[in-house]
Amino acid sequence: DGAIETYQKGYGAAMARGDLMPATEMKGLLADLGAAPSADALLGALNQQDDDPDAGREPGPDEVRCVRTNRIGPRMTFDPFGDEIGAYIQDHVSQPSWEDWMEMSIKVINELRLDLGDPEGQRVYDEHMRDFLNLPGTLFEGREYE
Image (cartoon, rainbow, N blue to C red):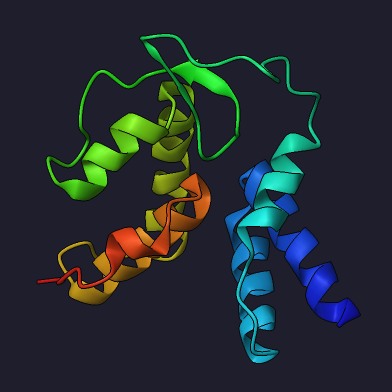
């Protein structure tokens, strides 16, 4: 459907710019149509910014091919959560992408008025982190929020 494709592109473009409110609105419109934001839309918007200078190159020992940007970047020096999700992030997300998420997470918390002490606030935070960093949903399956 043309509307779904347009909303997918809009969602990807808004997330690439860091515009949380339009991205959330597009995500809601997609849900109304029975669709979810696609990782391809987000990656497409991110990759449209300029050509990949790392095409065909494998990451070095202190580098990763970032799942968010599909580019090679510096490996994170720490596990941000000390669990399976944190280990995945350390192994698959570049330091600059993590720093971008840290800035975006402030917007997520403030604009959505999330209470991270509340299980629903934690779930929403994780959902936005998963979308922003392009993390696989399977990482969060069975995660309990307390």
